[in-house]
View 1 (tube, rainbow, N blue to C red):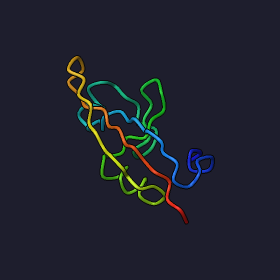
View 2 (cartoon, rainbow, N blue to C red):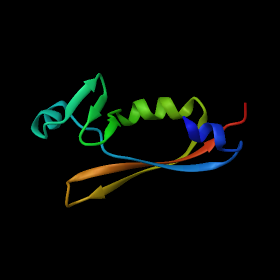
View 3 (cartoon, rainbow, N blue to C red):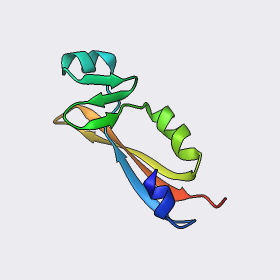
View 4 (cartoon, one colour):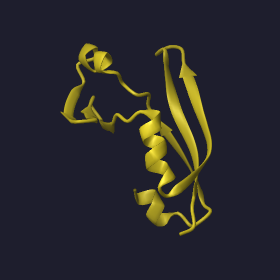
Amino acid sequence: MEVERVLKYGGKVLVKLNPYITTEQIAEWNVKVIKDNLLDDGLILLNNTTDEWIKFFERKFEIKQYEEIYYPEYEQYNRMFCLIKRAI
């Protein structure tokens, strides 16, 4: 993760993620599965669950805050993390 390399210890970063896409949505929206959870919907994206992202981020960051932002026009929630880089 490039942000880990350039961020000072104690530095903060906001990470906004699209919602997790279910298998049914992948089929309905004709999203191409490249491999496992790597998808192509015109953009390349990792389709991780929130728990998977938490485990990923917690290796190097403290999760200061987590919010879900609802977009009624899409009937979906985006996910936002406020992360603080941990000292080694």
